Image 1: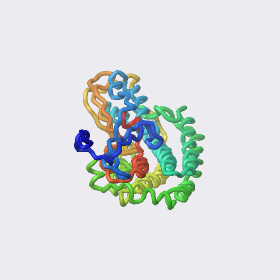
Image 2: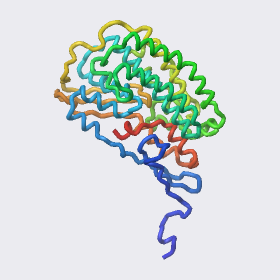
Image 3: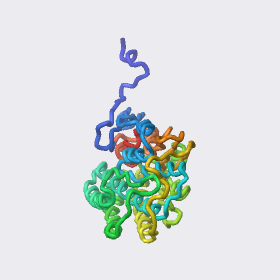
Image 4: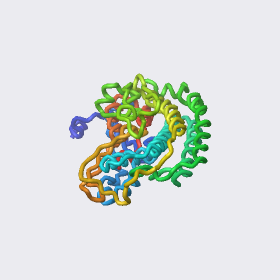
Length: 374
């Protein structure tokens, strides 16, 4: 039998390469099957599921309050918006009114978490492309935010702070003072990130014009967050469908132009500046009053019905669909996870790229596998 007969339809100069699931650039347990012809990718197949824990099914056997703890494990580097999305959906079912002070505190915590998440992205993305120093700077500031969270609720990663009806605990004057100190320290540091990484010639050469996503492709694939806005699409849940009083704060939504790896990266860098503005305004205008709505029982039993709520999480549009049958546990909990949706476009955008650009493109999507697999 000839070689041609043994491999019908095959090409002898093709090479199949597994990227992951244990690989330092995948930021989690992701496997990408790459088919190469020389240095060029002809096919890419993202393979997920290594971290699946079945949280939607777990929720069916847990009370609504207990389900909030499950949300911390989705996007575990930005857990506050996860808490908030579930609580907003449950509060729609219950029809409760959230006190203004609790609304402001929710905004403060989510925006601080956005900064911490983007700092993690900035530092690790630099390492992906060979720049180690920005990682040290970014994690220095991120640790300060985690110290604030630890001071507030005792946790540094999985907070369970935002609760159905409000928040777990009020802030102290000392906490507000330390947060102000951090913001004062952090604002000049953003110029350092630009000098170290954003406009570094080597970094620009590795990211500008690489991994292009057009506006049309970004919308067609359902992208959200910086991945969508990096292509110039002006969509942010905080603006288009305001929640928790975001419409009372003055901030802008950074947009990219070319839809390249650099555009997606720099959208996140600019978003941190806007988050600082929001946190400062929320703390300055923090109203007095309760931090938990009255009438929220320890065992929540919403009337039969369904509700959908979504938030602008650090990685995009995070949605929660809840169905209640009147019992103490959700009848159905479905999560619209931005990382899961954002990851799908890899199979299209990697084709035709050089294998050396895979890490730059994958890193620019900024996925968290806990949210992708759930």
